[in-house]
Length: 448
Ligand code: NDP
Image (cartoon, rainbow, N blue to C red; front, side, top):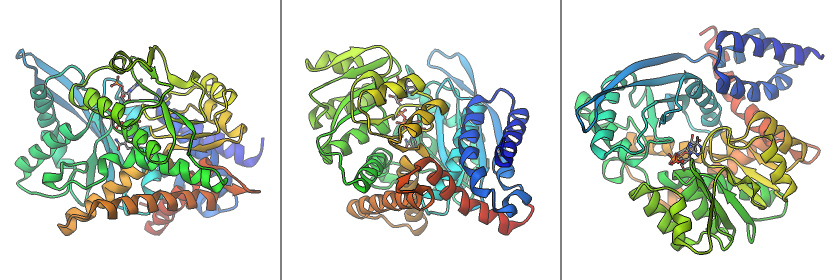
């Protein structure tokens, strides 16, 4: 075993010991450390100052009780969290997730990832994440509102426009952000940009809703272009049918590709004819207005069929996982490659397991890890913060251009740090480019 491998193993043993049972967090740290340790092997200052060890420990974690009353008058009890991971390069920034699977491990993995991602955007944003095990599915608007109000009664004292600026994530969309912002404003009597993803009437930014999905597709287009290729005429499998998936489909359509799958937690639909603008409009109504299940898409369109499980067995050239973590395992990664997949751009956070990533890397396909590929969302959130601070509103075409440029720059950073003999290791490139800025800021602060 080399010295670097020995250091890496010792480091990971420490992370596992200090964070028992937090499997998602171990996975996220391991994925990053595997590329950072070789990079810092000849840079002893990072070892001496224990930079990665410090980056793997959140600045603080807030955990709180969230009692609320359902429509029948029953008192319900949820757990709320805010993980403030690292504010070395700017205020904590990262989404809130409302989903029954939320626990400390999930939020720590997301907050850790967010620190690197936010650094990659080039904007002054630190990393954080939060949420609750509350399940918005099947709840009425009034129930969701009462939950959000109760959640904010505690959260408000930990956030602020220069301290910590949460946004949406799984289960937290425009409706929830509206309820949360309304309650913050009421408690604090201040109208400030304390949340992003707000409605246009109260300080939201154009393109924010679309940014994550669009950015994921721009990143894929950048990788293809570097190889003299494009999305034109390619079959694309997308998973998920929420915010990220929806706008990924829209951008693939703009760029001439054909999306043939979508999914939710009940299964996936396969539509070999492609999900065009009219079908996408049906999906948006189904998922965002009626909050229905993906099977209804197959009931509506004859060209489509519904299947249980995940969509990765469907033959495609491009895969865009846009649902949730660990939704591509080793077997599924192999199936994708055997069926001719040449590129994966991760819209969701950590959708591919470690063995799946190894499979993509060994096959040397274009593999864009989430912290680079889905950074467009938080980048436009950063632009929403700037607009709020300056009390101005930028135009849609300006913001779309900025998003495109940001994704291009992130791609370039990955190439800068990840290219070897003409092949780009986007995983290493993204991790190292994200690491350097935060690490060097931490060096400047001394022992903090
Ligand atoms: P949404 O809540 O809008 O949509 C989530 C989608 O994923 C739904 O289709 C949902 O299906 C599906 N899904 C959720 N959990 C599971 C599961 N356990 N198994 C199968 N399907 C599941 O969330 P977003 O689109 O906002 O987020 C999707 C991913 O993108 C997440 O990983 C998130 O962290 C990441 N992301 C989001 C950003 C944003 O701007 N929103 C920014 C960067 C990353 P169902 O309705 O059945 O639950």
